[in-house]
Structure formats: C-alpha cells, structure tokens
Amino acid sequence: MQDVSVLPLWRCLERRGGPDLYVTEYFRVHRDSHPGKKILRSINEIGGHKPVIAQMIGNEPEHLVRSAILIQEQSNCSGIDVNLGCPAPKVCGKAAGGALLKNHDLIREIACSLRPVVSGSLTLKTRVGFELEEEFDELLRLFSELPIDGLAIHGRTVREKYQSNVHTACIARAVATLPFPVTANGSIVSVDTAQAMLSATRADGLMIGRGGIRNPWLFAQIRDSLAGAQWFPPTFRDVADYLEELLEEVDTEGDFEADSQLVNRMKKFANYIAAGLFEGALTGQLRRATSREEFLRITRDLLDSDEPFPLEPVEDGKLFCGGNALLVS
Image 1 (tube, one colour):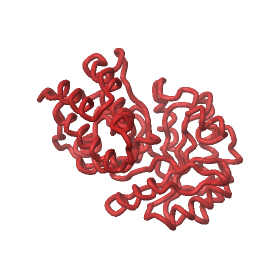
Image 2 (cartoon, helix red, strand yellow):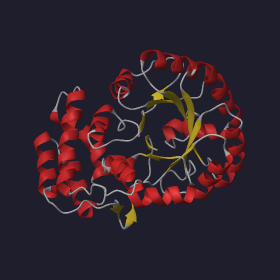
Image 3 (cartoon, one colour):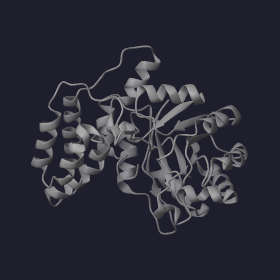
Image 4 (tube, one colour):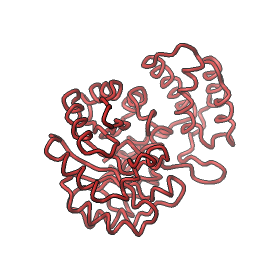
C-alpha cells in the first residue's frame, strides 16, 4: 500500500473507528537510506493512540539493522516488520520484497540479525511462495525456526499478484503449525469476506489494505459483527463526505504547487474507492478531473444519494480486491 497507507488516510480511518493496529508503508532500506520523515511523522502521530508497526523493505541485513535502530530511536513504533511479499517488478528486480522468498538463507540472516536490536515485536509479511503454492511447506519450516513474534500471510504467490483466488489452506496450515500468531491477508473487502477468511483459516488477525481504503468503516463493521452487534452501513453520501475529507487531509499534508498535483494525488485513493461504481463512470470521470473544484463536483454529482454503498466492490463482473498494510485483530 505504498503511497496510500499514509497519515491523511489514517486520520480519516481513525474518525470512523480505524484498525486496531497500523502498519506503515515501507521504509526503503539500502546502504544510503535514511528513515523517511513523513512515515516517521505518521508513526508518531497515530502511535499515541494505536500501536503502529514500522515496515521495512530491503535485502541487506546490516542496513536493515541500522534502519531498525534509527526508526526506533526516532519514533514510538510498537515493532518492526520486514516485507517478503511485495510483488512489484521494480522491487523484486532488486531482490527485495517477494523476491526474498527465493533466498531462505538470507531471510534467516535478516531475522536473526534484527532480533537483538528490535525492542518491540519483530514480524514478517510473506506470500505463500514465489512461483507456486507448493513452495509453502518449505517456507513454513523456515518460519518456524526464526526468532520472530508473528507472521502476516498474503494467501497468493508473488507471481499471482492480486489476481488469483486466495490459498486459504496455506494460511490455515500456518495457523495450525507455527508457534506464534498468524495474520491472514488477501481479498478481505467486507464483513462477509472477513468472516469467511476467519472461518477458513482460524487466523489470529486480519490484515486489510485496499478494502479499508474503499470502505473506511470496514474495521468497525468487522469488530461489531464479531461482537454480534449491528454495524454501520454507509450511504453514497457518506462516501462523498469521506472523499472530501480525505482531499482536505491530503492537501494539508502535501506541498502542492498546483491544483492538478493535488487531484492527481487523490486519484491514487479514488481508484480504490470508485472501483466498479456506476459501471465505471465515477472512476472514468475522476481520472479526467484536473482541478479541486472539478473533482468535488464529480464526487457530489454521482454520490449525493442516500442509497446504500455496495458492500463489496465489483469491476467487470468480478470482485475487485487484494492488498495489504492495515490490521484488524
């Protein structure tokens, strides 16, 4: 959820209940890197209210150790997480993210190097394999031997990105096997998909990404549902209010020289929120917007209604889902 799991979004989520725990966009780690100030600010603001895990991505143990020390010194994070699951070609091409799943010795070295310097929790985010889900049994043996406090599993391979069905059986096997908590991730976009994931995997928690951007009430909805309580069903108008509020938060945090820059930044969020609505009309119109006024006008024209917001996103007749970076336990 790079560039979208950011402080302006987190503020909007918190006003609607928010997750129990936040995970940052990743700190890029290499020999010349320094912890990003904007991500540190996100941790320090939200970290006073909710636990925040600092996520790192990289492949050099000594620099991951150096960065973990600096992040902990400069923030009130609750722990450190290392990303082993990002499928982006740019990341995998640098032998980081999901590409690390091809190098078990390096994963072991990273975890063992970080353990002595991480004062809070040390966790990993993974996928079930790089090419095939059959790789997962060997990965399970590796994870069971590592000095970590938890594992988040996106139930697809790196090659599958976000397009395939989620391999819930792999997650369930990890829950039954590993000696620490396992968090399930992948296509959790509604109360029903959350309950289905928990039922299929018995996971200790759920990690939610794109679904939480689209529906910022989702975290509270899931908590209420699990408690047997009625949960809030947003209307299109509620979503319009959320988009306007998010625009103001993004504008406040950004340093935009022109309206078009602000609108282009908002389109990263709107792509998730508008997916499948009105047969793609909202997405198409917002993509063509070039000013704040035009963006807000389109939002109000199409969303000014008391009709219920669809519980699940649909695009081209298929469920539009996937993603990572936020946690509900």
